[in-house]
Length: 293
Image (cartoon, rainbow, N blue to C red; front, top):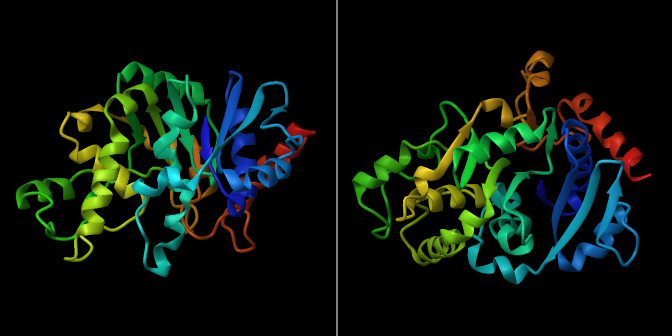
C-alpha cells in the first residue's frame, strides 16, 4: 500500500497506516513517498531510527520511506493559481504518478490518501483488481461526471467539440483511493502523456479549459490516451472510497461503519480541531503508537 505525504498530513497518515494494517489479513508494507529534504525529520516523527528508512509496525506491518526530489515531478505538475486550489498543488500529490520508478519490483499497489481510514481487508480489493486485468481501478462515484471540472468547450484546439462533449460525460473518479498495475502503467507511458497534457495546458492562453489538481490531470490522461488505456479502468463498489467526510455533515454512523475505506476529502480533516467524525479516526491514530512501540 502506498501513501504520499508531507508534515501537514502526518497525523492523518499515522492513523491511515494503522487502520490498513489492522484491517488487512496478510502482512502489509506501508510505502510512503516523501520529499528528500524532509525524509529525515519525517522518519523521526514516525518512529524510524536515525539512519534508517524503515521500521517494523507490530507483527504484520513494515513502514518504508521512499525519498523523491521535487524535480522529478516538475514536468507533470500543474500550477494552481487560486487560493482555493493551493492545497491541490502539493508536490506529493504528483509524486504518485511516479510510483513505478520510486517503488521498483512491485507490480500491483493500492494508493491511499493520508486522510483515509481502512475498515476492510485490502487483499479483497487487490485480488478483485488483479482478476480484472486492468491498468488502474477506482471506486464508483455515482452521479459525478467530468463536466463538473471541464469548461463548456475545448480551448486551443485541444480536441474536437464532439470529443470534448464525450469527455464531459465520463465519470470523475475520486483519486484518493485507487489500485494500479505499475508494470502496465509504465508500459502505457502514462507519465509522458501527463507531461504532454501539462505542456498543452500551460501553453494555452484561452483560459482554464479544465480545472483541478492531480486528480483531474490523471483522469484526463487516462481518457485521452490514444492506446486504449480508457478501456483498462476497473470499477469497484463505492464503499471502497466513501469520500467527502471532510465536508459532509449528514453521514450517520451506520453509513460510516459500512464504508470499506473512509475518506476525509474536504477541509475538515479529522486531526484538526474542527474535524468531522473524529470518533471514527482517533482510535486508529492511537493504535499507531502501539504498533511502533
